[in-house]
Image (cartoon, rainbow, N blue to C red):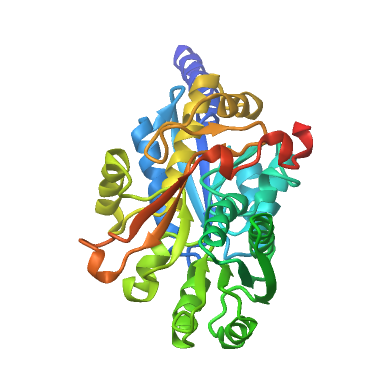
Length: 401
């Protein structure tokens, strides 16, 4: 009888141990990387963004508040419905607390709506639409690295001042392209220039000939590419083949990162003017981060990949500062804490979720000017963050008014 009682007691103790262990497992902080890993934006962010997030977790120490930090990732294939289904599963059944990267504006806007409903947190890096912290803002949504407004201020105003006062746009036909065309067009007109026209192309276009012919016949001084990733690479290459630059028109890559310049090569990309918020060779801190990243991936980090590192690290810092992973407590800390890491040393988060940091106007070097692999840019100007982004009360975000 004593043995039987002891066995029952042991089973009860074991069951109790399992019950007490379960909440600890449930408390693991879980981060999701949801982006394009196989399509038009695979090099722009892709699997290298996953590696950047892993670096941030490792640099933070792998745990927060005594609990392990876990990372999950998925390819949304640039399909908003697929992205929302993945995000819903992550939130409802897999315990994901924060989703980041979110390449493609249509995807980011859809996932941000779900995130708001679930009272979770999203930190967009790869998508560009300024609506994310404007008309479509969320109390639980944040936007890191850049947006269409900042890119427009950086590249649009600089080219108008340099004499490029007439524009024609080649625009990706979805939320991001529309926003980039509108924001840049507004800046061009405010700077004294004119928009002569625009043509919209489907995502992942291989043949830009008809679109480029329209741009060429417009006689605009600047052909603005309101697209990104492989679409920008194809458009720039084909513009060269059509003799657009040789004919006196300038091609502006309105969202171009070092990843796309690498894909183009300096011979095709030389002379392009672009705006980014990060470049691996800016200073000692960016170079140290980039060399670590290169050892893991075989490539230097883009603005999107470095931004994903920063977003992930900032989230973990906010969880630690809040003393909980409760979303309402964490969003308060995200808005309160400065951003100081390999991405930027003087970032700040506005009430609408917009992370503000300086951007840089770059010109792509000529092949003979490059001294090593990935030595692609020369800095033309610094664009202060406070000039690149509107204040929260002027962003159009409803909950900040």
